[in-house]
Amino acid sequence: MNDAPSAVLPIEILIAPHPVLRRKARPVRPEDAALLRALLPRMYEAMYAAPGIGLAAPQVGHELRFAIVDLHENETRTPITLINPEIIRAGDQLVAREEGCLSLPNQYAEVVRPETVRVRFQDLDGRRQELDADGLLATCLQHEIDHLDGVLFVDHLSSLKRNMIMRRLAKERKGKG
Ligand code: NI
Picture (cartoon, rainbow, N blue to C red):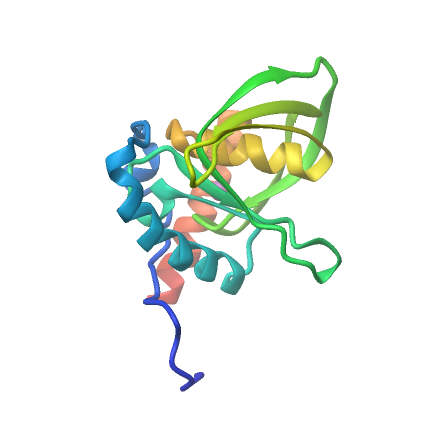
């Protein structure tokens, strides 16, 4: 227990099978700016504390199309805030990479996805940005954008594997009481 006062109010990360995780989020509009500015520091804090490398708004109960990513490589923070992100190009090459998710704690599986993607998004100032990604960043971006459409990484697995993971997750959560 850390008694140091936190700079931001903690935010709860929803755990599957919470229904909000399954809904398609709506685009962020200019009038959502104040909400985003209030939510983002709390989301970053929750992601770093977890620790995780990505967190999408539906995972904290907001059905809005934005997500944050930080691979935190070499102990350096490189936060990326993606507003209304979309994959505008995906490479033909596929790659299998182990994925986890803060909404499915302690569950991991290899997921096959395109190895490279180009993502278009808006930044906090409303400017349009494009990002070419490969490796872990490409996987992470696809995973987070999936969240905005109510898709979880287990949806890319066979139903057998998916059911196994969901049952294991439910059992572990129950065990925690
Ligand atoms: Ni996730």
